[in-house]
Length: 312
Image (cartoon, rainbow, N blue to C red):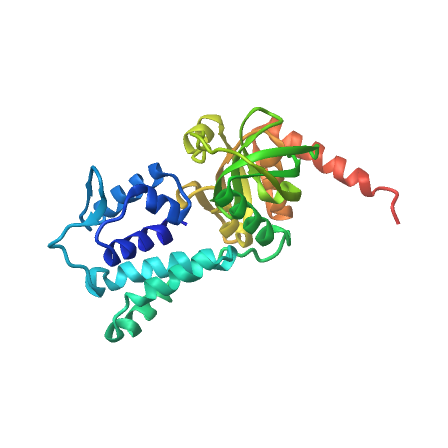
């Protein structure tokens, strides 16, 4: 993880007079270009690292600059500890354990209790309540493939239930909302794809290596796209599902309707995903308008009822 590498680079530069970019790249198994970006990030954080060219050149912390355990505030160390701890819950690995140990070594004894208190004020647990048991082992496999630049093979099921066998070059792990994805170059599609972890099965790391290049970052922000596609429908909900409805709209779009109900201006796109959201509220939700969506809701309810007709 990047924060582990940044902390480690700082400690290496503190221990050594000068270190070359290639030596750092070999040490952390990344490209020199990644090291250049890391050095820029360290400089932006306020630790002056300068580069020297020519024979014996490399990077070093400026001679008159001193760093001690007080360089990180209690808030800084707490934030780092929270981030590393949340990742270590999901992705096991010696590097995360080492990073936690290194960060904790920066904590002076007289500030340990305060920093522990602050780091425990926010708990970030990325493990799911329930669901696929493959999540953690698959995350570890993808992480290994990323670090070693090895191909991954797997079966992928699209949202329509169609399964295909894929081989892809992994480039990035992504946590979006409560779901894990990974971005890779798919050999079947000859293009970059974002794969949802819950739709993957039979994941294997291949013996074949690939040379990472520039990659297409996934589109993760859809607010503008969705707002241009969505329309507003009027629904009436029982107060018991108000909290869940707030996952999709704001307080300003919810209006009291008597003591037990609310009228909601609900964002909606006419597809299965949004119809299923409405159905997830059960009999605590009624679509009032527009008429054609209310009619479609009735048709879908009748189709569901037909499945159970004649049953025992």
